[in-house]
Image (spheres, rainbow, N blue to C red):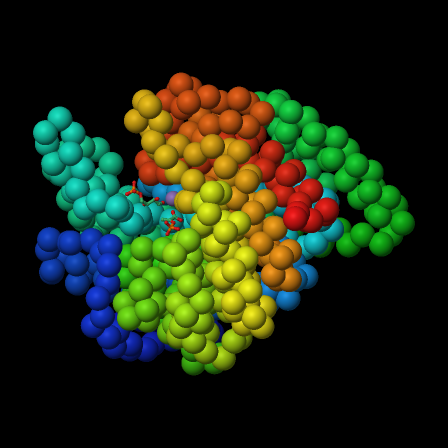
Length: 457
Ligand SMILES: O=C[C@H](O)[C@H](O)COP(=O)(O)O
Ligand SMILES: C=C(OP(=O)(O)O)C(=O)O
Ligand SMILES: [Mn+2]
């Protein structure tokens, strides 16, 4: 499809026309009406970019520090954002959770933390099954609010291209508030205590309060000494990311950067390709290899050396620092067997990318009550296995990528809140995968900070 784009800024983004090759694209919607689709795509292509190419470049520089072992990235957010949950309190509490986790990690590890939200575009899901059957009725599976509705009716489950535009607007509203929070004083390091307000007071929150007291004292000392830069403390860098899954959303958002002539997907700073759509000759890897954002590829336990090298050659042939990350999601049971061997087999090549641990997607199971869930202890065990694997291979454990919410849901089992299997249904709000709640997220941050500080063998 040719991309019609308008030079809206006069500065950075201009017109171009990309002929996307006709390659197999897995997990795509089947929109019914080609005329409605064509209209939608051209509207999307005419909209302003959601991010500026220069911001994506800055994230690439930050990720280069991650790859070099000088920084750590924290990536988190919903499995599936939904249009109805794009509200001020939800966004605020997710941001607060990520800021709190980042402070815990920075303080514990003494390393810059590159903060990335799985948000402002995470509206589409790959599914294992095309359909869902309930009480003998079979309908198309829910594929995320960008594609269809969760309600189990033929009308809701129809793939509707209008949803592409609604997802754009919801992403725009989300990013707007995130930018407000992160540059308008809300994320000021002198507000560490305020980020903890409004959450239940479990053990992790209490531990956080103590740490916030220490940070307060340190900040007051720096201010009194005249060495703290008040402006620097006021703002934090925060980036957006989502899975580049629905190509009818991502392609129209591609614009050419006038500064360099290069293409960027302006729907997010960082885009990743999931485990199910990373086939070497498919449309998704082709897409991601053409854009200049920092990108990531998920790797399950079956990924071997040749596949990883082929992905590197296709997506990052020039080995540009910060360009490519691999997000491993091996499962707590497999990671210690699989990851050290993979890293070692890659030799020096393993040092040219960042390695990020997704301890969620290899550890999902169904509870007796029929809820998709995960055990907090498996999540922690996978992160431990990740650190141990990198210690063994002599590579840098570069970050974690987690599904979380600031809300006090009961979707994952365990943690200090002692959510047990029978409790999972009490407050189960995700429309796809189970997320860590606020307490579990903070608890994980404290454990990872210790791993960063002391190492894991
Ligand atoms: O987030 C990802 C899910 O694991 C993926 O969409 C698959 O889920 P399913 O097995 O319920 O379809
Ligand atoms: C679908 C996801 O992950 P994966 O591609 O690793 O299964 C996800 O991140 O929600
Ligand atoms: Mn998920």
